[in-house]
Image 1 (spheres, rainbow, N blue to C red):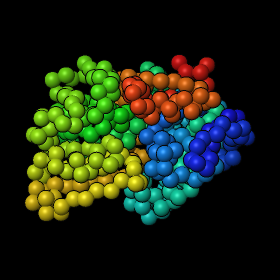
Image 2: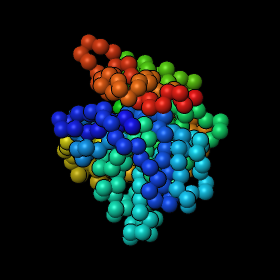
Image 3: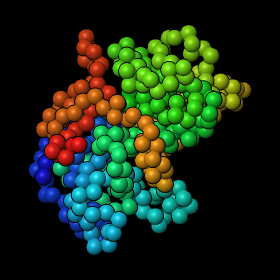
Length: 343
């Protein structure tokens, strides 16, 4: 099969790999249809996040069941499924305490980081990490469920509730999905994006959801002076910007991944205003079914702007890298492994 393998540089190479086969009793082999390029994938290729050389990248994916192990009863060949790439062992102290996202066996088991991912024609995983796509849901909406669960994890960590205000820093896919979710909860949302072309794209995607409770602005907008109950840094390097925007007793959620980012803060400012800074970590897989259900009511497919085959992966990643003098026109880019199954 074809697969995109991480090489030194870092860079990606399209290689031939043996097609995965059922090995364990609970294994499922999935024929991948779509894989979304996550900000983490791009961060790996620009040196902001570490991954193991030789690993197949990719973790946001949907596909069709190709083969199942003898112990798998809930799925059968042909079923449409969403991959939950946040694996857990279920046996360590953290898992037994219900903190599946802090499983002590994560090393070597992070899909698309140090364990082969889904930028490929097929993928093998235990059945418990697959969720059936609802019959009334398109695969382009379904492929956005994993990013939605990430947003859900961070919004819940921030304790956002009906009627509260939220400022989301960064108008990329995660910022847009977080804003979409905040509106669904009943919050008043402000999305902040520096690039004017991307601001217009955000307006196009989010338009009509609830225009009275949504504002999309540049970082220097006077409206930001009012602050918010919850501030989410969806970029991962904007903590110094986020903390002053939080109201007294507000919450700041660090959401984006950037291993090179640092921040300088005055502890007294945090103490005197009662601001809480929250790192939610990976999502707890127990909330994944809620994400699938929420996706039925959210037009997540609007976030998808580009679809390219695996062999055009360089062009796909280039569309996510703004070029000088060129508009920043892409949002979520999908790598398509099986276009014939993309309906």
